[in-house]
Image (cartoon, rainbow, N blue to C red; front, side):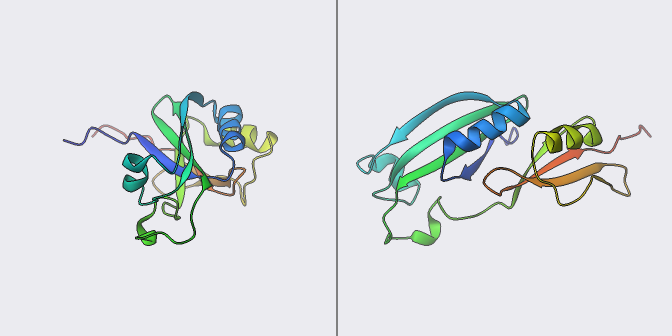
Length: 149
């Protein structure tokens, strides 16, 4: 049985920088981190990244987590490279907010870039897309209020 989403993984060149962004602007808690080396075949096999090394930083939020991967050594020629966890995948992460306009103003004042102001959807929700310090797309979403029928 699927219980719910646990975390989203993001590859970055600087885990401390990206963790700082989410800690400062989105109030993430740094839950822990660990490093791996090329000899950690149990992990590197599962990542489809044999011979790699790096570290993982886990950030916690009230309702989910971000797992930041920083590859420090990544051999150019890997078997099954198309399956490697270091390749791009998901196109954005979304944070639920209670007041999109207020969060947009707060984050913009803190230096987060947004291409446009929040937009109200026909169903009543409000959203805005911005970018974190690595250029990843971050959505803030105030879901529509559901009315009881």
